[in-house]
Length: 296
Image (cartoon, rainbow, N blue to C red; front, side, top):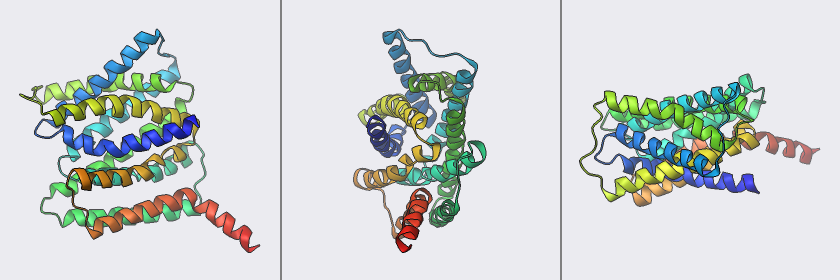
């Protein structure tokens, strides 16, 4: 029951994160927005450790876990924030949904998890759906839309590699420690990049921007990651990534209703193909087995 509640919470957080992310960069530098979010998240984690008087594990596997998680957070989030300037929030979540399939492929080679025929079928559906969205991007007025889609795909790959590495080496590290250690690695990188870019503070923050950064700092960077790493420790890596199957539905709904994003027939079709691929990937084997038993 605890794992189920964590799973549902992560789906909600991941579903609301893309829209909050776009709101957080409204008329301000995206590097400041992501840096502020991560600094806030790390501060909350350190306060939590101070209040509980706990110690962060520092053995060899734990340190490797923090590096893997921190590099993933820094690489994936920096690219995602840049891309969010050019594509709708719903698209971000849909493309991130492919991390389920990417995780399955990597887990097959890295964690010896199975990758049967139904998962190859799911992979083909996912690639086809992504192609439809890419085609939509090429017909957009701005070439930056295509670059945005490609950037989110790269971000998804980095996020997936990081998740599988954490799953392989971080099984004994508590979820809060994994989040804290990862942010300890990532935050200096965010600060450095922001400083190299000029390190300018925004002259003013609207209520929507400030609220979005705070929400992302608390829910997206701390609660979401703690719950996600908890799920990752208690599920197969490929099953944990099912959060990305449901989150796009939430993100698309919020994007259209709260942000006025246009979702045309091609995007709906492409999204449907990706979700169908993810469904076939996860449950295709079970359905085939039940069908075979029924026939017998």
